[in-house]
Image (cartoon, rainbow over all chains, first blue to last red; front, side):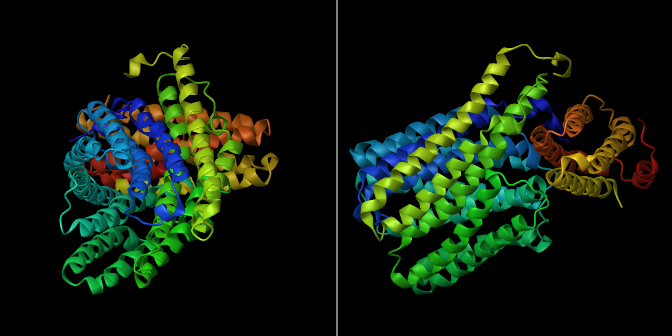
Length: 426
Length: 146
């Protein structure tokens, strides 16, 4: 019998999630700089080196880092399992991803020689999170819908990592296989709808009823939706290889469930029982609206030969995944600081409300949404793009400021003497 | 009803009372005391059903008194102290302070509930399935100690 998840000691040290969370907005700022350096002509093509660099600064640097940090934190609580050698794996994963990603960005902007080591390091970085977590799941005693969603998400993460390594190495060697474009397409679709999607859905099953006292998700939704999406993604792969002209059917299938999910999120947030509206509520609601637009745009983009795919990724990657990630950061980071201090015997800790400057958080949110809408309109009016690249960078800087403020508060209080000696509980 | 279902349902009804309490404070903190007391009493009752009945049975059966139940008891203490802060905020009619503590309590409570529902209740149901009807009956008829 595994009791480890219940012990305070098994809650991962705060340095693990913080390391991932605090790095994320920095890559947001880097992505903003890259947008600023480019032109709309260059950015409208998904295969231009600059677009690939920006996409991955966000997808790996912001989104994957945050999701991995959150997984390290949530696995013991949501699934009741502990990850073997979690501190070691977290350090290896975090540092390899950061160095690998910086090499990747530099590689796409200047010398492609850097892309081979980048591919290797990113592979090591992703695998050092994914494999120990998948291994830890073998001990789970109560398989819930959320646990299944997390396992599904990690399996897709494993597959897209292998594909990503191959794609990046091809760029490094300048040697592209005949199926390079097909692989790139599978890599990106599975990353969004196979890795990030199920993880968000699985977490939402818990988070919305719990943190906002929103109505619970229907049993059908919890039991089936992740399977139905997985089926759609595999069907999409098969159709893409065998009958490409019919692949839109599988696309519409997957999109339908994400549309249903975002509508459900919107309705549940509207009928939530908690009256308070903080920035995390705004982020969930905006995510559901952007995702609704994004799913339709993704399906109808097929009629236009995918020429609007970059807009689709702004709507889904930026409007949906990135929004939820930020909403979650505003919930998790202050709570972790409070929880770890309290568990160590500090009683007079600022409340969660005092830790986040709510005015700054609101500004951060509005600037973020303003930038997203601006990016979309920049495709019609290219000259306005730099303005929104700047507002995006400011929004990322404010996010980092909010997070660092909490980390510094934690560090400052940690240095003082606790109100109670908790060593008896250790 | 088994132990897991019984206590999980009680979590949900505490959540409902929590939401009603926040509604009441948001509307007017000076008349929110009743809603706060309803929430606090239900939560205290839930804690005692665990501490004085279910945890004891679990500890006796498994021989683990320093294990998961000790951690859960410790988190109950943390939550009781937050509820005291909320009571003080209501007395002082300071809704900012109230929502600061209630937000903290909410997240602490939810991750606590998740750990219980995910692990402890599942284990308790496995170990105590034969005695489940008696334990549920003891919990529902328990009188809360001040």
